[in-house]
Length: 186
Image 1 (cartoon, helix red, strand yellow):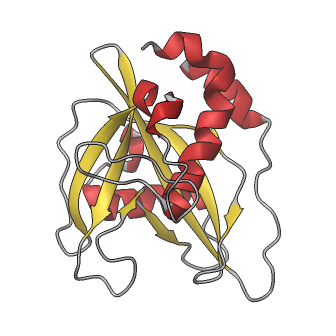
Image 2: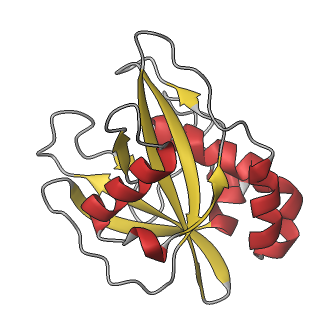
């Protein structure tokens, strides 16, 4: 599945020019295999942060200057937030960037495979907890909450709700994976 995913990600746009009043950001979708099944690693933000308190997110943040790439920013932020070293991430590629109205960002999702188990070092000023969700659970249509107030909302998994921008990025990733569902397992 990993080689197929790399090939699919190579066909994605490498980014787009930013509208003048938007800022560039990037997140990492940390993909890992546990007990023969692929999972995505999520974080829940602390209540100490000024925005998006307590929300489920992928590690990531703003690019530092015009010279930093989305991949470099996603890897840097992931290391700062959960302690995954950039050299431990096998970058598979990037999804198409998504534009947010809140905060006026264009966010590039970077997909990367990480070794598992991994000795995470959580930055408690930013991250309350981390948790993994199996891809087969995310791909099950019964786990999408179509009645939710916000689009792209999943039913709670282990007490955590994936929604908003993180849900949107997750949904885009899952749509890319649909042709490979048979390899993911149930």
